[in-house]
Image 1 (cartoon, rainbow, N blue to C red):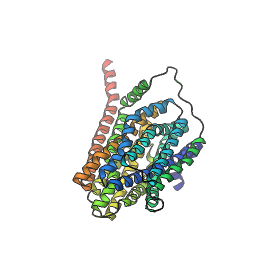
Image 2: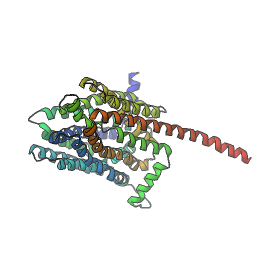
Image 3: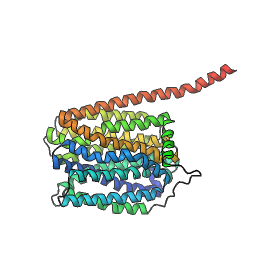
Length: 423
């Protein structure tokens, strides 16, 4: 029983090149998850405002929204290995510089926003490239599991990342600046793993196309497939409405629960622990007919948990509710990304995944208005509203999915009726 579960859950790791990419991506995700905690703490400590935390995320959001579609086109045109390699160097250098600015007491909110903007620019290019790279490293039948393992890696680093960041920030001799420097140093290892992978070639087209032409073809590929369109729009909607809870956690802790804003790491760790456990259990369903239903159920769990977070009476209750937030969010992301890859053709992987990556850009943009809303009406009320909005978006998406399936079932019968009438 266990061996069958393990082979189903971790099957894609049998492939050497994917295994190396997965290890490097995991370390990269670790630094990325740490940055959420450290940047939030620095921004809140500098100003004492939720809006400042949201403003820092705005830098990444603007870059992702503006550049993700371009990043997807580039990922489908150039060497994915070279693109990912250059991006990793840029992120590592950015983290190191930010750490030096904090240590020297030169950091300001605009500089912190600029650092996150650079992060958003880089991920707009290497995010789609790394996801599309799976199509080159894995056979088609192993790809859903590969996507699931990428999500498991991301969820796992959400445990280690916030916990590591929280511990390092709390050590006086290290603090926020030392934590940023540590994050930058991790990319020495990440770059090393990328160099171990075989070189990839740029796409060879018989008829060269413009960037705009490639982007148009990618968008048309999505809009011509109703299920793929629904998956992309659902991902954008749920991430936009429900994943800005991280912006509100420092203020919720300090203003409502009587805790230090630095305790945010433990809340995020609780979320990540449950996310990892449930995602591991559900990874085997990524390529099955149950994936759609489980995805919608996970989104509902996320919405309900966010609404309950608005009513958490104390810190212990908040930790408990975060288990639902992590489980719902982690499984939703894993299954949605896997279904998107299954519904897409390989030559469009980069462009299609870039559209889903835009969700994180919109999420960064939403952080500022949600932060302003929390400053005016309270963190509890804002979290409750976020949960309700996620539930509404999920119900609408579920109804559209049912309608698409009914239409697809009716079309063969309709066509047969026309054929019979002709006879």
